[in-house]
Image (cartoon, rainbow, N blue to C red):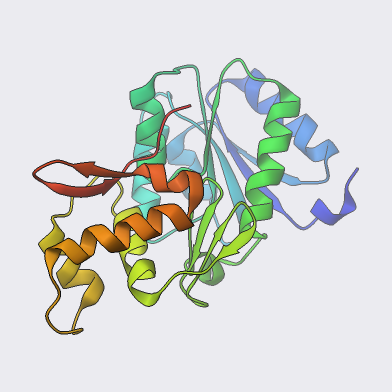
Length: 233
């Protein structure tokens, strides 16, 4: 048992008793403290600041996992969420990431895989408090820290200019939304004087290169502008 996990609370939300039981048993063996909910409605009552992660089933009676997660994000709660689902389509995966999910595991799953994913997500967030989590924006292994104004990709710091940082934050925070070059100029440059629209393309090209594989997530919609879309593996 990994005793360094003993102060980490996880909330498991699934309407299948067998799934809840097997997840609880194995994660407790890893040293985590586990709370269980059989519905999103019950999870809403149980969830508290002590929890550091939610394992959340997507398809449940009543409120769906996606809807529950969306409500949490709109309320400013950035607790890490790993979705569990029997559905394995591109649209479902994209939905999960676009509303702020940190990972997505398809059923049936390997317990070893679940444990590994839990450890990875917790490592990225560091078991932080709610206030600390609000200073982070996490997509996969891309971590934006608003407090230190830094970007971390695959556990390595990426050096960005202020403008590049502003562009990345704008696009990632609004994943799926298309921003025209004028929109980006207004929001990323603010009061930096007169800047040509072509300058946006130059900065985004540099940004893409700096953030590696995540640069491919910044998509140019011809005639419309730029958007950030999480690719499907």
